[in-house]
Image 1 (cartoon, one colour):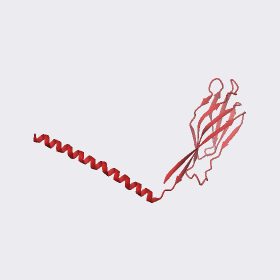
Image 2 (cartoon, rainbow, N blue to C red):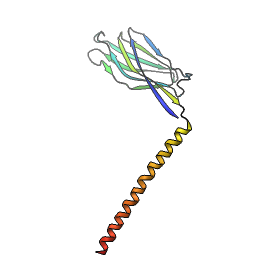
Image 3 (cartoon, rainbow, N blue to C red):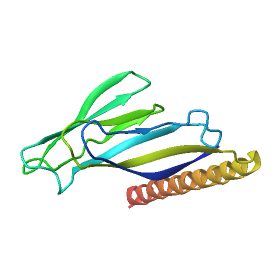
Image 4 (cartoon, rainbow, N blue to C red):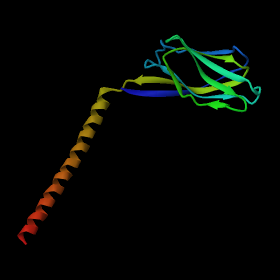
Length: 157
């Protein structure tokens, strides 16, 4: 069996206090039986953000019932964070719990797929690998025999 992976860009904007955005995983999706995950790569504070205002982004995961802030941004100090946070097989909600933003969240939705390959193709590939592995061993034996032959000639002299 072989697997394929699909990368889909994920981009959302949180504007205004208490704004929320949800991402729902499709756990019953037949096209992607190995599952889906969301990876948050970067969270940015927009240029329009007010000076001296903290902007706090909180994430809530349905699977673990976990609420945790993943970014604290402030104009003039911290405008970007790279959390590299991964959410596997769970729906998540992002919420701007403090500040008015705008806050941009960017990442990837990764979907893994499994593809069946016929057994005949697998057997053919295995046979070729066995032949390739056997050839280097033969060469190694010849090299060893040559080195013994040279030593024998040197001993005769």
